[in-house]
Image (cartoon, rainbow, N blue to C red; front, side):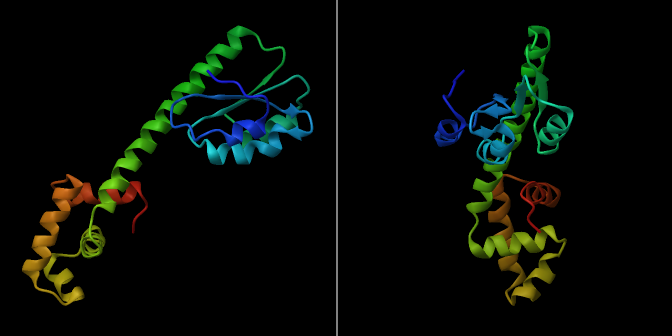
Length: 173
């Protein structure tokens, strides 16, 4: 667990790629937690925010939740409400981190492709056959087959469906 004097110091911290949650008060002196929520959420994408406030109202809680807050609790917060909220947020964070790690691994594999392999990969995920790809690129069908072999090797896949899955994870069209 790590605590920060203020949100600005927190925003200066290194990016955290571990599961966790952020307990954030709505009122932070000069600034509002709601005003800083966007910056916090962008920098720490995989860490849900739980707001805690003694002066929050319904419109404020609705705004926080609309902006992506995980939960909104009123002070004084009882342990029987706080700890389950934290546990739930951390479970959610673990899922987000796992998804991010999978995307990072896929991105690394995709980035290992040469520009020609990536070009052929894009045709393959569109459903084009080797002969069609060869015609589009004005190369021999055998050359396409060789590139496809390298692509499947680098991506660690055996079937086109697996290539499509990887492409969808990174929104590659």
